Amino acid sequence: MSSEIPPNQSRLVYRFSSLQDLSVTYEGHSEDVATRPPDISTRGMFINTTRPFPVGAVLTVKFKLAHSGIEINARAEVRYCLAGVGIGIEFVEISPESVRAIEEEISDKPQAELRASPGTGTPKPKTKS
Image (cartoon, rainbow, N blue to C red; front, side, top):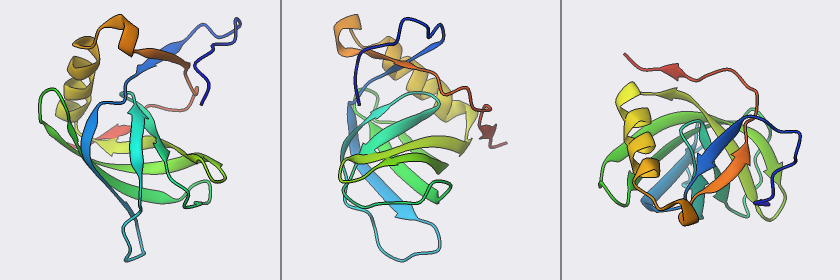
């Protein structure tokens, strides 16, 4: 994923890659998915994995934020797949507390560690009550 931003993109989502204990499960399948540390934002993440997924596949993701240690559980949909590189996912069910925890984790990072990435223009995820 390139860190360069096209000049015509006005909306940005900051991402960081400081997570622990990432677990990804493809809903309807029994195996866990092998991953390497991802980039994350409040809207979703890019997960480095060689496992291909179809666009629209629903995943369950669990991870701990490295700084706060808060565990995040969310459902997500695959928005794109780069063969042999990884997948871009968007959170579709995530609690408001989890979104706030990710926001705080991002705001605690020095600007040098944050990478700006163009927004996807997709609808906001549903939050769990």
